[in-house]
Structure formats: C-alpha cells, structure tokens
Image (tube, rainbow, N blue to C red; front, side):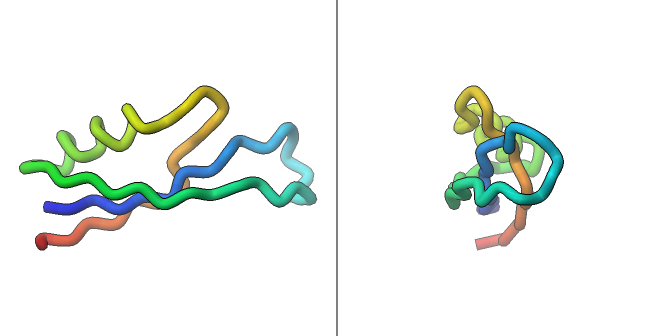
Length: 57
C-alpha cells in the first residue's frame, strides 16, 4: 500500500496567524503501521504529520 502524508512545520503558537510550510511525502509499505513508521522517520525536528491518506496501489 502507498501512504501519502502532509508534513507541517509546527507553528510557534496556536494563534492561527502563521503560514507554516507543508510538504508532501509518499512511502510504500506492506502494512499501515509499517507505512506510518516510515512516515514518522521522515519527520525532522519541529515537524508533525497533519494528514495521512492510504492507497492500495
């Protein structure tokens, strides 16, 4: 399966006034948990997963 995610730089506060960079990441894995682990490996310090989508192919 293919997992596609948006990874966002964590804003400095919760004011909602910051335009933080978001990048797209795609990984392929046999299971959802395996793919989620691969996505988490892509996180740099100060980033978070904001969406994860799954595709069978």
